[in-house]
Length: 138
Image 1 (cartoon, rainbow, N blue to C red):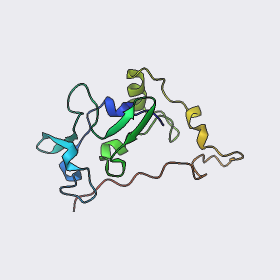
Image 2: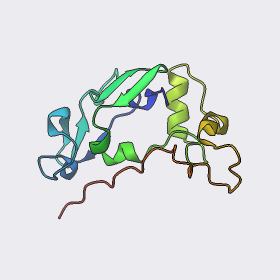
Image 3: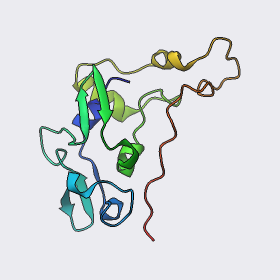
Image 4: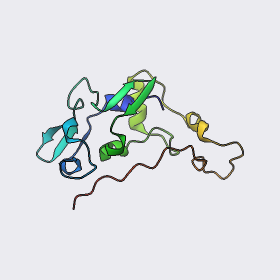
């Protein structure tokens, strides 16, 4: 989608073990700051105005996460509304705060293939890749 509003509305806090200083392939440590003894947060999300340092976007026009494969687990847990068949209150709230309409199921019809009648709109090769699993401490 072309949104990115969630990256401008929420503090992105996660356990320090997700950092690439500890877990190879983890969240780039240089993009984080200490939140408390157990958590880091993405720079730019600790206080208002919120805007994650990893966000490359003009909200509502284009959006990309510059560390998408290495993003924190909390980012992986926030789905866009209706992307997987259900509304996301976090997505809706962020979009409304930016003056954007909440997403609907119709916003995902671009993934439907003509003649797809098996009830699985994501099986036509157009779906985003599955997010990688969060790093796990040894």
